Amino acid sequence: MATNSDVALAEQKCTYTINVKTGTRADSGTDAIIGIVLADKSGDYIEIKDLVSWGGKMPAGHDYFENGNLDIFSGTERWLPGPVCLMRLNSDNSGYKPGWYVEYVDVTKSKTGSVSEHQLFTVEQWLAVDEPPYQLYAERSV
Image 1 (cartoon, rainbow, N blue to C red):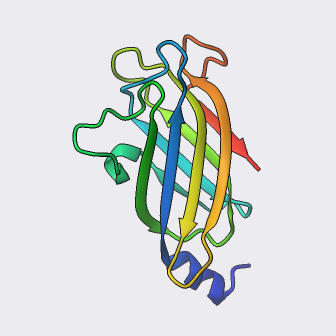
Image 2: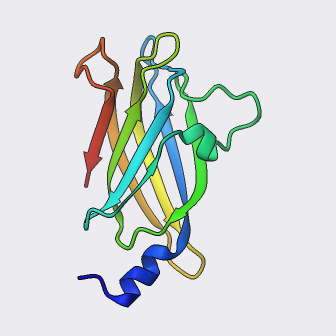
């Protein structure tokens, strides 16, 4: 059962910084809309449906999720009480050559007055219907 302090923590906001590394294989990049779900061990989660619109931090005119890119996103969301231990990337499979090869996702959760929490998720997978494992998501947990 959630205590009052658990509820108060969950209502607090924090900054999530998400670094996404696209692979360098042929046709690794995508123009699809990419979303992410981050969860803690209790199953509490946040969902970001479009990383670029939510908090793309690259210079104006930058083409996100292209071959070899390390793209940076940052925004404010509800504080997850526990450390981020699950990450699920999603692709809407839109755009020209929507398949996307992801090397890794690096997540940092920070809040004023608290120690930052960091988690690296190695992905090394296509999000594509024409490349194994033939799915538009990648889920990793630690």
